[in-house]
Image 1 (cartoon, rainbow, N blue to C red):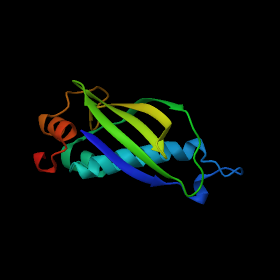
Image 2 (image 1 turned 180 degrees about the vertical axis):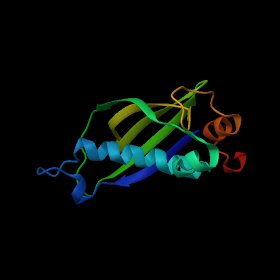
Image 3 (image 1 turned 135 degrees about the horizontal axis):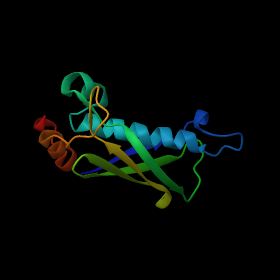
Length: 136
């Protein structure tokens, strides 16, 4: 499923030169995955208590290709790719039609209290692939 949200760069997101600071851009990316998971009916904050699992981040990789400044509106697109026991979120962010960064988060499905991965449950897989909030 493809998901897009708009991030408005705030003054507090910028460095002394008025350019968005990369840690704040990573925060915007994580917030995008939060919003995506909520939109498909599987908010992160319910995974532990309601479903007994988590999707912890195991790696991330980003390439920054442009700059954004306070007041800019950045379209951050997320594409979810589901493996057997993992989920990859691919991101593509643009401002004024130009790519400003691209990246990937790799997450693994882990039961609460365990130190091993498990298969992504079928209903979560369906929601991630189809974006159907009724699939939970």
